[in-house]
Length: 150
Image 1 (cartoon, rainbow, N blue to C red):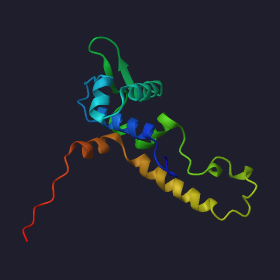
Image 2: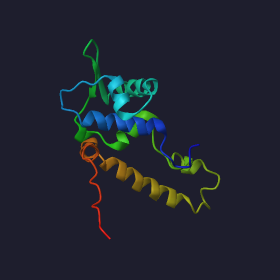
Image 3: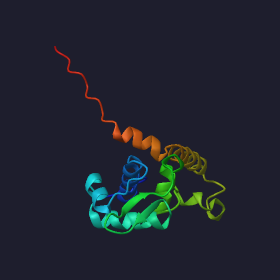
């Protein structure tokens, strides 16, 4: 069950794949099976997501025996927002963000400004989280907490 405002699996898997590709050497080409295996994503689902990312020119596909996928642009130029919108389309926290004037309650709506501010802040965070930054934090293993004797 998806909860309100929860990121879809499609977005999560797309981001995982893109962050993984961003963590690879610049000339690396990785098979979709390897991406799916390393990111623990069903292969069929990963293939569909990668096809979408290729169509949106976020990922480059290389055919052949040693074919696979690589980023189409520098990881510093691709944000979380870019990936989210490539996979699912524009981010809107509420339908009124598209066309506030068409809402019958727009003149008396006390929530619109809150929805708008929430969306602006969320988009700002996603826009500033680029794949290079995400890949750096993704490839560094978490440090275990020190053991404290009682």
